[in-house]
Image (cartoon, rainbow, N blue to C red):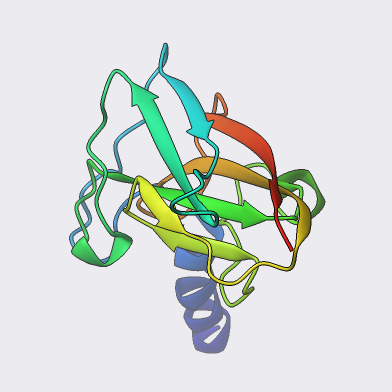
Length: 144
């Protein structure tokens, strides 16, 4: 009986979903409604840098800041978010084609000459994309 209670006591916290910040137990801010996102293409002076624009402005901070009222950007380079992200699940980390950032002006690093598409996905502190989705995409050509 004690073993069953111990297993139940361990498993229960794992089975209860939460949108709280594990560091502070403060609820994570809900995604705003009515926001729009756009992604501006690179310029001749910065051929691999895109710029995110949110209207109206939001509280954008690095996830490492731990602010449960903040959001941050995810830039997908030549990778459609629908192919790697699941609704309600954190955006994957460790993929060099996905940049987690608080910077609205993002250098994408070296890109091969040719056509590229970048998607912007705004996520909550826990890296879960906003719902309703707050995203944009831009395609551009990197000269050879």
